[in-house]
Amino acid sequence: MTKYTFTTQDFKAFAVDGLNARMEALNEHIRPQLNELGEYFSQYLETATGEIFYPHVAKHARRSVNPPKDTWVAFATNNRGYKMTPHFQIGLFENQLFVMYGVMHEAKDKAQRVKVFEEQFDTLKNLPTDYSLSLDHMSQEKTYIKDMSDEAIQSAINRVKKVKKGELFVARTLTPDARELKSDKAFLNFLEETFEQLLKFYQ
Image 1 (tube, one colour):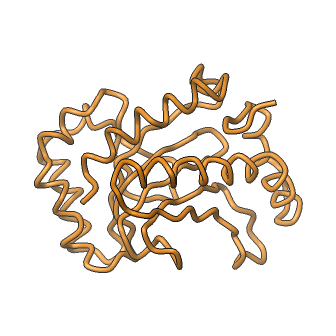
Image 2 (tube, rainbow, N blue to C red):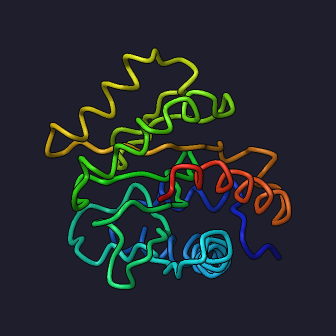
Image 3 (cartoon, one colour):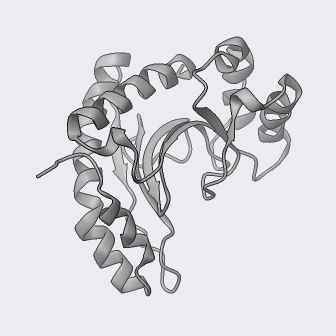
């Protein structure tokens, strides 16, 4: 029995039709691992930064019709919420597991917060080849940094400053059949390795 990782069957919870039925599937197949990951990595981040991090597992409480197409656990230093500050996420879509750090469009002082990616521009450019940028946390679409020009990266950063809905996350993803998901040990190694890179942008 695995505690932290997800099977290909778990990802199929997102294929269940109907809000209530899908929420039941998510609660059975995905939420338990998100709770465990929340506990594990809030401790990990506290050790790494010296700050207290709180896990926020998505509840999807405001939904009344449309079933969620993704779910996640977010990590922030604010116990009451995570959207207002830069934060880390581990989450899933039907065809993708993602790990991210960045600034959501609701963030306070987001124009100032996103400047870390300018200050660490070379670090961002030199991340391993499987790291990407996400300009919309609600979309699976992400672009590998290695495939982006300096101008395109800068444009993504500028968009956060100028556009109300603009946001930016540095991300790393896995497909549901990835070898890193085959055991808890392999998955935790992948996540810790990823957080080590993402923490370079945490201030």
